[in-house]
Length: 219
Length: 219
Image (cartoon, rainbow over all chains, first blue to last red; front, side, top):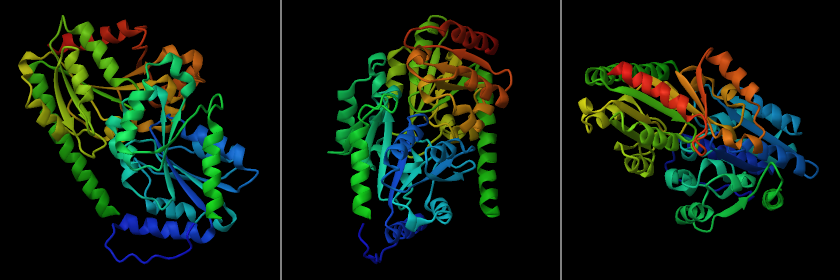
């Protein structure tokens, strides 16, 4: 991560200014930050569990979990071996930079290499709120259907990588991968994509290699 | 903060008053109104298609479709044989009573028996906005996971019926139906529930009978 402080003299929304503050805190501590977004049940928490279990011997990992009501996800992340901070958003359908700032204050950032933020399950509003993380990743899943890029363009346009989870279910579902990928390509040309299954483990290696590469760059 | 709460309360108050106006318009025309809510990809549109195809010989059906960007769902409803009105919400993550009022103005209500509103795919905000329909139905789906009642209590508390879709996928997914149902029962005791599969048709009869019974009562 660049350690340079870029002074940007332009009017930014309050959230974006705070997101920049968060980014600076991550950069100064050498933390690579990931913002994971998805529909409810696409497999965010499962992917986080696998990522922690497979990378915990190389990196110190922390998870910030945004949830409407419970700490189920944070508990799973902690059980998998990460520092975990729960944000209960109350009724909010997305995280924002203020919420992440409060969560970061509860972590010992210099000891952390990888911060994974699990956003609230929602394909709309999370795309509109920068948090200050370095990369935004969308987790789609086969049972959601192949029309989702067409229906949630804002989300698909704004991300840096796409995970297509639950590919083990393809034989049992009418999911046209070509139609899905054409929609993605139209919105976000060349988007790096990881088809995988958290259940079978298929495809996880490429995802872990991508995350690892970015963590190394940020150190 | 308290200023913000006051504004939110005023918005919700105005929405509820308008929802009552919508309800009155439906009642006067003898229309039974359903508000279908779900996560993206749970199968709202598929269930609507099946409902139209199976009930269209007995009832005049209209569909109001809320979507962020496209008319894919409204097109599918129209193809299945219903009057269809599309609401493109722009960036909004839920429908509200104003949007439904505008949609109702495009329909010939006295000729309609059943109005199905397909809300925006989201398990959070749609629960907070009354539309004026008579019954709210949540469509859950097996691949979303068995923890959803625990994670989205507001949605599960506020509905009059629950569809559990994609039960044909149960053999391929770790979904504990007892755990799921215990969560539902704690939040919404005695909730009428329809486990079904739009893909295989299993369980559709009970759902169609329930809808038909309410349409008859509303006539």
